[in-house]
Length: 355
Image 1 (cartoon, rainbow, N blue to C red):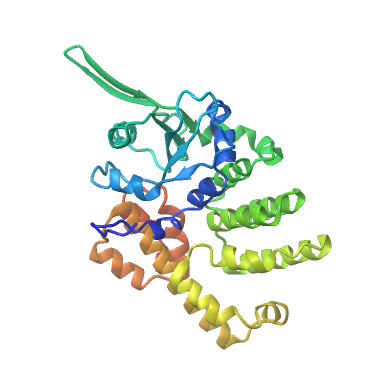
Image 2: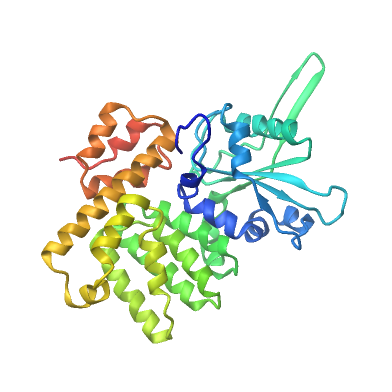
């Protein structure tokens, strides 16, 4: 997320992770899946209000480690005791010593700013099964100050994968996708099979078109595959749509292939794919067009990875920028797999392809 002191770049923040858009588009489903007791107390007849800019203004001078996803939402309660309250949601992608303290600090800063009850909640999306921070506080000279907050731990769902795939909730699919992405990190064949399974599942549900497209975006963003496998999967998607007489693929391309890779990739897609993509897929792309498209994709991948790195680790050192300039597609795929979970920037680049 951009380092503009006067005003944080919230617009770019929206594309840092599919979790952000999924939470905002399907917040009630998010609460129902991970925090059902809290879900039951919220008055869903009143639209939740997302306050991302307000959250950034409160916490930008209190950075305690890097955030994966954070949201501030104003909601109303069913019992009428409070006209409205604030819910602060964090999705944490890595084990982090300062995480519980950050939850504590953000909670009291938000309360101080708004003078309203603030509920802090966390989804722990890391792979450390026993790391479950749910409180922070201190006691000095008889003064006690403590925050206990509810958490949902994704590793707790590892043994429930089949059940997740049966549930009628978008976040059961997102949780399954997250788990399968972690499981298949080093095996492209297994990842292809898992991604294929998830996409077929979307077409089997009686969900509306937009929900299918949104979830395709999440699956496609998380489960990156080599280009040849991606093309094979596209052929299968076309076959599914023809057999079921569903025509989602055009919109899926706009959201799934562009998928937040913004700027460079989107420009490359518009220039290289707009005309003849369907024809090229069926008859074989010409070599020159393929090269131009690859250059556009590579540039877009590099820009996206740079944004993600800056988001997690701040301003990039010169050596890291140099590596990005010389990166191959294989490098970018490998680094992109690591960026959300690596403890430091050196670990990200250590995962690259050795030339």
